[in-house]
Length: 324
Ligand code: SAM
Ligand code: SF4
Image 1 (cartoon, rainbow, N blue to C red):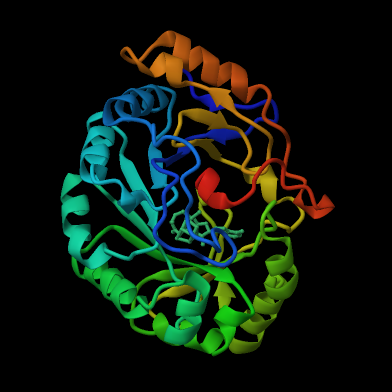
Image 2 (image 1 turned 45 degrees about the horizontal axis):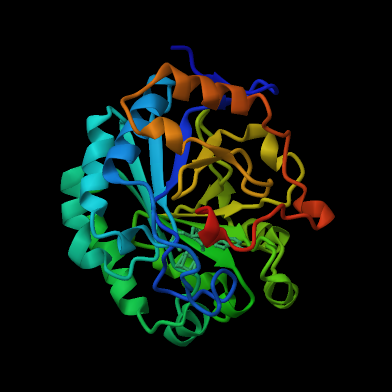
């Protein structure tokens, strides 16, 4: 099968797969009141995920990222990872809030996890608690260190750029990567249907970080062809890197290389689009040409970019809905 290319010539070798809408944290910009069950939890089963992964793999997708909600809320997460591995996907990544990372990471690594992103929006315990609703900063950092000690090929940290998360300044994060070989990537807070007031109070422009890099001798690292939207910066005194993902920057969508599937099996063409293409009826029996054809057809409809700059977030109420 030939690979996935959209009407704008963009190639898609990366799938972000949500495995649950459930989350145990209540991040102020995402689920400030915590997760509330509104529908039955009929999320994709391990077998459905396996068939989906086989088809995407045959279509040239070499990396699958598990996300959610909180992916580790699924008890069968290890089986999910192992099943995607059996489908022949080379890179299996996960984005997690890290609440149980130190106990679980070895099992996930043994099942086939290769890339780990841990979300840490503040390095001050009180600020972390205020943002996430949980006093677990120390445990999350222990999890990052455990993953590094196990030698996972890639360990990164995601930090949403928030006024309250930066109470100690960017220096706190620079200290964090002084001896740790991890990349901390700051992502500009995105406005969703639910978080308009929080966005107005907490949004920090990526330009502030770029100025900080320039003033402190951090220099941008050359980008590889399959690099995502982050621009990473290095400094001779630091083992790790700092980076910026700026979804509001002009041209952000030009290099889009990712597709998303929700925990209920809908293909989502743009994070901030409307609706999705249901794949679930075709996930019941073996990898199929029909499934591949539906994915290709849908891709023909992929828009050039999101319209966040016009204040339009599509039907995205919060990112736990689709997986970020
Ligand atoms: N629960 C997991 C976690 O937090 O890592 C995975 C799902 S979460 C939706 C994925 C990523 O999206 C996290 O790094 C989170 O901080 C980020 N995120 C959620 N809402 C966001 C928003 N409105 N703007 C920017 N990033 C957001
Ligand atoms: Fe949960 Fe992740 Fe959303 Fe925080 S960002 S509430 S951890 S899904």
